[in-house]
Amino acid sequence: MTRIRTTLTVLAAAALLVPVAASADPGKSRSGKAKKEHRSDKAKKEHVAKAKNAQFKGTVVSVDAATGTVTVTVLKASKHGRAFKGQDVAFTTAGVKKIKVADTNADGKRDLLDVKPGDRAHVGARIAKDAAAPLAARKFHAKAPGAEEQEDAPAPAPTPAP
Image 1: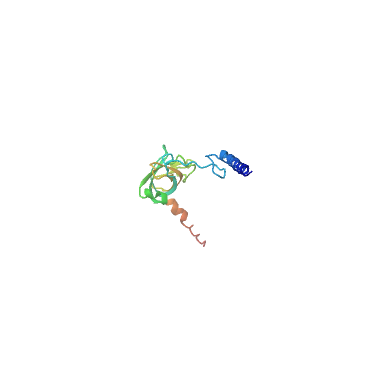
Image 2 (image 1 turned 90 degrees about the vertical axis):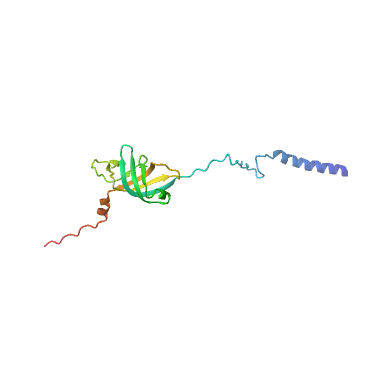
């Protein structure tokens, strides 16, 4: 009787372990979730530097309306554009939706034909570390040097009537 009881106990234990071992999938963890596959270092994607927004302020040196290129001497720049400070940088304006500039040639349009050398420029561009000229501008504002003084000047005082 003892021999039968021991045999039945061993068989019962084996019967409980067989379904657990059979259902174990090498691709799943104990919780039933799929294990993450680890890539080797060679299979990983190379790190690509993200482009950053940079702001540039300066003076327009030249304008080529036919190609949509403006060259600006950068006087001030944000953190990501400081490498270009003091240099003449070419910007393409093909990606700019609306150029903010006064209609100086009175043709009814505000475009690069209204931008003149010597104008003050504010350019926003998205640049990467290895950016090459010309940089693609996302926004472009230009003002004539005298226009800023006229906007800031107070209105003349009215003269008293005698």
